[in-house]
Length: 413
Image (cartoon, rainbow, N blue to C red):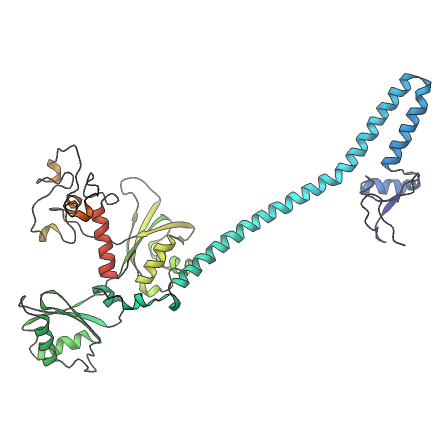
């Protein structure tokens, strides 16, 4: 018949040490009886295991003795009460000791679970971001509206591996139809050495052509005297830029792209598409150990990088920002041209007055670009109380950047 512990009610195994109360004859695990392994071994060595009594029997015996001694005098009663306190304290301590041990053990387990839970949450967050990026470029996400969107000037360039060439007539009043007619008369569009694969109409009678060999096209145009009436030039494929901030000074410039590709595969997965344009301290005048990098990337990488917003470079958690910028003229403060090629009137970037900025004494700021934009009813409520160089506050600058993203890169974010 299996022996059970009178305290925990669990079966006492054959190899388990246990002890029996000499009074109530109940059996206890050593720990349930309030004994340490050392105390049990000491009693066993002394041969006093049969003289052991449980705490409840001790309490019962002392209580019975106290009642009997009460007849002998009040001092005996008080002595018995003191003894009773000691026994009760011993019982309470023996009961709490295993509970304290269990609480400590549970506390350790809870700490481990909290750590594991935090780790799992971080992993789930990473996997969720990767899944979102993969789903964005999945064919299942391509809608009919995406397919039917008219390709923009440089989106046409970026989405086609062919080289791109622009043919513009020297006569700016010439029609596109005349330009195409002259090209067809001189060059076969399906010639295997040229193979024109894309065509887009441009202003002033020009056309954009995609062909397999720009050099061969130029040779044919020159030999057939097409170049005498037209300006022919090839253009490079434009790529968007990203700005990465928070890079430590110990990171070597040559390691930036390898770190990005190896540590952030879910964003940067094509090393041949990336070019480091700039690597500089965040603040040139102050001593700093933080640098930023500007990279030229492909459009898909640009979208993924801006959507996630951060990456790892070495041991640095870096932030990713849009690196696309527009040129601002220092004469009129307009965009997309330099002061050397500016035909507009002089305009102060602080107050929009007709003077250079170093002569400005105005108290109130006024952005000349937003002021011009405000004349349009659509933008009549925009703020103009800022300088033209304050990019974060300038809506005219933001609109110009967004237009550049869409027109040149086909990015609508």
